[in-house]
Length: 268
Image (tube, rainbow, N blue to C red; front, top):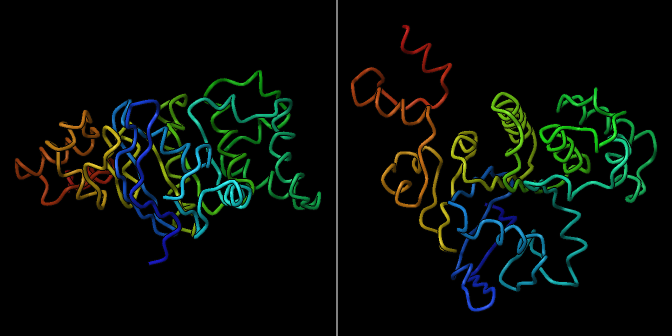
């Protein structure tokens, strides 16, 4: 496979505290990977390292070592949404914020307009384009932050607790949109979260705790390991827990993580 992210023997200290401890990880181009772990597990530090906020010759992004010399090229390849979207805006109207990065890259005005229309339609924010960002709710700001990160068609999308301000229904819609995007393009998605309800659409899961990878593998395999997840301070998503119990009592013959599909199976 073609690895777009390579991390080899990465150790990172803040003061005397070892935040990342001899971490090794490869992410293939086009993968949808969830990195999960409790608060303080090192997830946010890992995001900063991937973005080059800390230099590290242990990390390669699309074959470029994360260094001062390469950081401009690396950041052109990455879109990122943080837990606090206020850090991502130039402020003013939503439409102006969406246009900003494209204007800096010298896109023609017609292409800027096309991309704004496309991404705002896909994310259901066309009604926000003429609003001032300061007047938006937290959930609306996170949708706009996602739009600004996708508008340049990045090779890698990093989501750092990116859905903490949106309600349950909006979160499901956004995650389904990202799944569709993943299935129809070669974008690599890294979803960093402590909420296991967000991981069901991902291909793979990495369990991080105390700066160490405790487990990694395909999503369905990792979600079967209830005891290991709980030992790392993580709870199973409701649908997974329910599916495991229904299978235990013979009401399902396989694990099903989509609630709508589960209802259909049970009613047959």
